[in-house]
Length: 136
Image 1: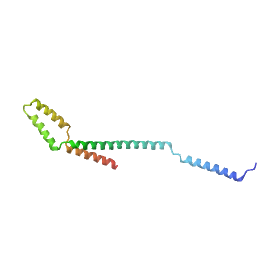
Image 2: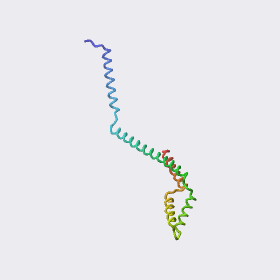
Image 3: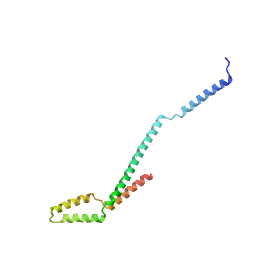
Image 4: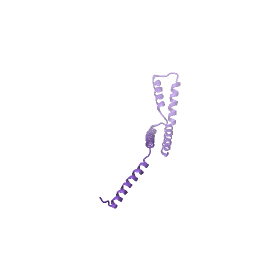
C-alpha cells in the first residue's frame, strides 16, 4: 500500500487543528463556582431593580392621587375656621343634641382632612424621593 504524501500531510494537519482547538477550549472553561456567583449577583441586581421600579411607580401613583386630592382640599384658613367652630361648640356650657352631633361630625372631618399646604408639602417630598431615585 502506497501512501500519498499529500494525504498524510492533510491528515496530520487535520488532527493537529482538532487537538489545538480542544486544548484551547479546555483552557477557556471558567470555574463553575464563579459563574454561579455571578449569576446570583445578577439575580440580586435584577430583584433590586424590580423593587426600585415598583417603588418609583408607587410614588408616581401617590403623587397623582395627591394632586387629585389637592383640588378638593381646604385651605389652611378654612381648616382653622372649622377648628375654631369645633372649639366654640366644645366650650359651650349647655349643648343641644344637634351641637353634640356637630361636634362629632367636625371631629371626624378634621381628623381626616388635610390642608392644601399639607398635601402640597407631601407632593414635594415624594417628588424629591422620586427624582433622587431616578438620578441613581
